[in-house]
Length: 317
Image (cartoon, rainbow, N blue to C red; front, side):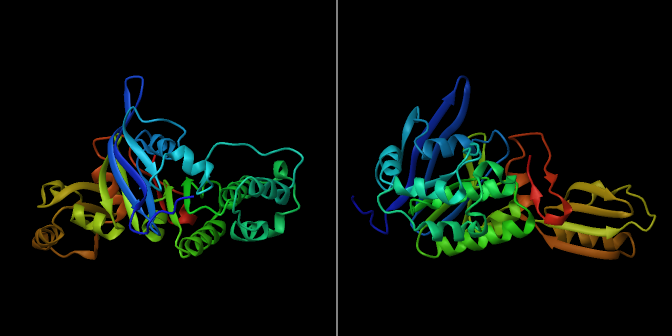
């Protein structure tokens, strides 16, 4: 097997286009991911994430442009065992234990990961003897992760990897992922949890309407939209005139507290101060959620929703 030089892209999209009927799901994507990077793929539903992953794994062929993995076609790279994938689809295999399943999958690869190691990384050591079709949703998700690891891949592709996991399991998952990436492996994952992307990705790629609209570190993307959030107590003063303050782009009212999104926080605060005393003023920079909503505002009219309070993370629809 030909080894890819460390400086060469592990993943390369060159003007990739994919249509489904009249829908242009992937619209001329150019993307290079290098060895050792952990990259998050973000986008609203229908933005092209799943179609992009399908092209990456060779599940679909581009209608124009090309996709290369390790300098070769996706199909050849997959058959060589250089890629592991954790997808959302799939059901449990009846009457087989977790250990038996992972051992079987590992046996199909040329240089598999030891079964015990794959089970440990996926947090499944204690469930190894349990039947796959008797597991909970979160445990089944861990099995998908172990299956993706079984071939000891150089590139791991994960589609919504922490769906169905509770907070503790999600933390353990990302600890395992960071350990795996630290070995020099490459990870590309899609997620609806923006905080996960911000905390665990070296680089974030935002898709909208099949195109890349942002590509960089989380900090770079947050800075690119500028502005931030200005919050304060109304103290019974009402909301009249807030929308006309300099820099204000939107207003949210929660009880007696106002939250103003502004593209010029300094100007907004100065104008607020001129109106009188400001109680419990809080000024914070743009979050990844702010940046995401700004970058994808034209791709969908659906608002972002909030994940359960116990997760403290935002989830896009």
